[in-house]
Image (cartoon, rainbow, N blue to C red; front, side, top):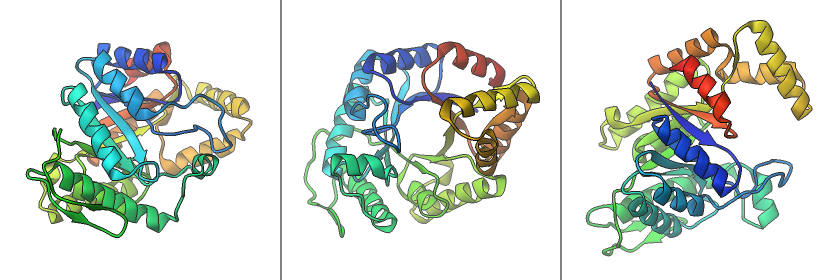
Length: 302
């Protein structure tokens, strides 16, 4: 299993420092989310445009894979996603992956006056966006006609290789879209049987679409909260809860429900090994960039 890094928030310089650090450590990829605010309660930290940040990182790194995980289809027309992706892919020398998702943070849509359709409509938009992108980057380009978007086939330039990520917590539609359209399925941690079912659905969808299921990269992502002993782990959870004004038991209950990597280091390694047995080959460690903390985690996990 390989490890990657996804950092949340921070300035461009902080993203750049994190990306260069991940590259120097030989990590598989560096990813950033696409949000206009980072909190469900409102803006509590600077939020930069993910595509502008990624274009900068494309020129200021040299070997690490770069990814946006994931761009909400509510923010941009697929033509804008296509042009952004093509531009950054050329700037990165083929190292860029575009993540596409439905979006989930209603607050950022409301704050900026962006439409936030119901879940079913957003999934329609996501599937049409993925189909539109595949049509636009096809050789030769193809027409696409959908309910929300249309594309006329013409010689779209530039047209480098398009690599897509589909991810999220969904158990049915998200795996199907990943298998049908994506190069990488970012399946969030879940109970073992649920995680297995999501991977199986994605691979079945790939086969149904005439794609090779074995070529679909299955990844996952999340924060790693661990300590040397159970007592130290519970102290850590209490510290996190106090900082966020939350109930530590509630935090642990939610983490257990999602089967998040947590506990002693042996327990974390066991959770990740179980996910690997079920098809995951890459794990993105999420959080604000802290090199000392990350070096400790990688030394315990690798």
